[in-house]
Amino acid sequence: MNHFFYARHFLLLACFSVFLAVVSRLHLTCSLPVSFALYGSLHASALVLALRARQAIWRSCLFIVIAASLSVMTLRFGIFGRQLSGTPPGIVGLYSLLGLSAVIGAVTYGILIRLFGMYALTTGSLAAIAVGCVLAAFAALFTGSHFHFLGPWWVAVLWWHAFSGGLWYFDQRRRRASIMLAGPPPAMQH
Image (cartoon, rainbow, N blue to C red; front, side, top):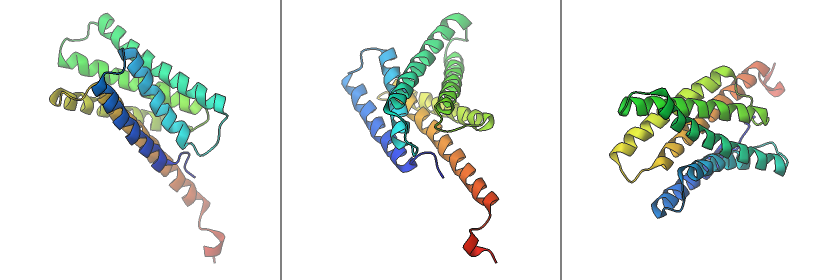
């Protein structure tokens, strides 16, 4: 059985993506940390609202708050890392720092999902999802540099879809493996 109602989850992500595009165009967020808290809380909300197993409301709210905090901490890490590391200036430095931030965000978020009992990601699946998030962040940076109406929200949206696509893939894979191990249903056995 899947851990999430994925159709609902991806529909929510699509709606939240449109919401972020509108909010960005209207300049309703006052700062980058507030925007990143919003990005983290929206994806976490989409997960909580698509979860098959019910959780206590306080637990769901706590998950959303921690996810928003992780998103802001990832932003702070990226800013601090840029100042501290002496990364190469220009495009190479930007891509390397964005990639590192995407990995840290994916790994910490995956651990949070596991700690809250939503989905037990393996180390291998979490690593693969993190790579997908890096590639999505790079694609967002590349497309955002060519289409100037896209802003930081675009990085978040592509990262969301990469992370959730990875969850869906590994959940489907685990479900198929458990079906194969269980064998055919009793009615089909001879």
